View 1 (tube, helix red, strand yellow):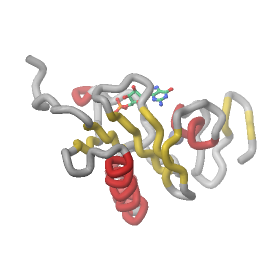
View 2 (view 1 turned 45 degrees about the horizontal axis):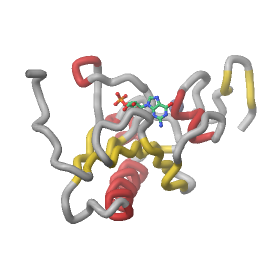
View 3 (view 1 turned 30 degrees about the horizontal axis):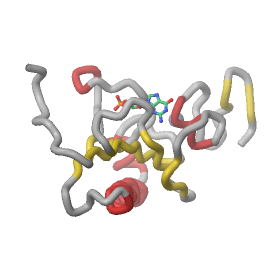
Length: 131
Ligand code: 5GP
Ligand code: ZN
């Protein structure tokens, strides 16, 4: 990767300047990484919403799950496989876990680099409308 002005220079669409998850993938921003391969990185969420809360991130920057699915469905499949492997490593594969892609403001989306949330380790609440 070539470092550039303002953070990261875009090279072959792989990194986007100022993108938090491109920074974690590149190792420029620290994270508690639990899986790393050529195409997928998994890191513990900094503000966990369950006992286990891991983010599975494609190493190439895609805006959201749909762009990932249409651009590289094999990587989407790998993201889901890594999500299951993370659940297995955390000992929650049998007890159950939730896989979530937030999309857009009503879903509370905050980081615009596609990522899969893996949540579990305790009984999860219902999901949907607030109160
Ligand atoms: P989103 O709301 O976009 O679906 O999810 C973004 C997630 O990234 C949130 O759950 C948030 O807690 C997490 N997050 C925000 N900043 C950082 C960070 O610097 N490191 C890690 N590991 N997670 C972060
Ligand atoms: Zn990115």
